[in-house]
Amino acid sequence: MPNQTDAATPPDLFSWEFAADPYPAYAWLRRHEPVRWTRLPSGVEAWLVTEYADAKQALADQRLSKNPVHHAESVHAKGKTGIPGERSANLMTHLLNIDPPDHTRLRRLVSRAFTPRTVAAFAPRVQELTDRLIDNFAGKGTADLIHDFAFPLPIYTICDLLGVPAEDQDGFRDWAGMMIRHGGGPRGGVARSVKQIRNYLAELIHRKRQEPGDDLISGLISASDHGEHLTENEAAAMCFVLLFAGFETTINLIGNGMYALIRHPRQRALLSDAIGRGDNAVLSTAVEELLRYDGPVEIATWRYATSALTLGGQKIATGDPVLVVLAAADRDPTRFDQPDLLDLTRRDNPHLGFGHGIHYCIGAPLARLEGQIALTTLLTRLPDLELAAAPEDLRWRGGLIMRGLRELPVSFTHA
Image: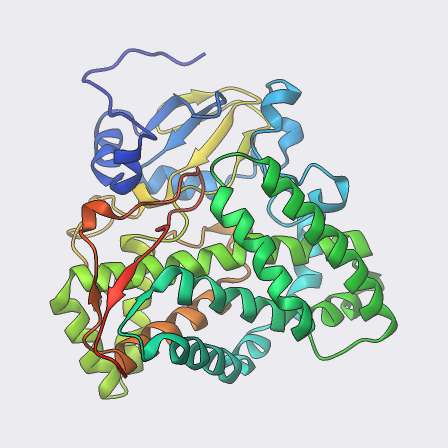
């Protein structure tokens, strides 16, 4: 059990006020307790890691397992540390919660289907979806950028990428909406949505095995390495984690990114000018800075110590859970110059927004592509877009892992 002594009054973590702006609390933790034993809202206790150097070490340390079987606490506690509703063995074997050598094999197989070329070739479809969604509200003069744009764009994108037929995509959107709305609260509806998605994916994978197409599921089924293939359960788990982790990450990248640009008009004008000149270098650094400044993933998924280790001067016992706070690490002044300043031209920017090490987000290229296209198109087509609510009235979704707005009301000149 860790030492609870403290040199100052600790911040109030996980309140609604904290959710709106966690960065002052994270600054306090970095100064006073950069590796801190904390009771979470679920009742589970874990180490929070907030300094950049410690975070980077923890993300790459293979003594910190992703498999919840290593959690020292009870089965009841273990049930609170994963994706809601994923307790079925059919969904447990995915890249977020397995270790080498199984992780190495699965990632190698998945990488053969999820290539940079596959993602790059998807750009015209992402642009088409982006324009179609903006067309739906451009003539109204107002919109909720989360509900009307940031939420449906990645859902339809991932559905197209996976090969979900067009007639089934609205059902996927409804299931995903349930997961988003209640991800940090009651888990019954989430579990039902997960079950519906799981059953649908199992059926779809079975059909794709019989009639493969030009899509990611067919690619996952056919991918092989030294004669090894993904099992149907492994393919379903991979599709599920792409859906669960991928679409919410992109929602928050677009939502948090546009909110930051609205709040920083000079930086927004700089980016708009670069887009007008076709300066893709500034667009690229801008997206990386938005990922660092207020990224879509606040805390990396759970890790568990498989042996005793020291992290940030604290002794971590075998079985202790460890949570790396990416949002805190990416505002660490020992690594980033003026970290609380949004600088879209920042070049020295090795942020941890997509993780680090062997568990670095495999879907990062797709999220970056969607973010670049979404922000570019919004700034081009709705150049006078502005916030239609007071910042203090905006609500942030509750939850431990992701950071994102529930809504982002905006107004603009009718197009």
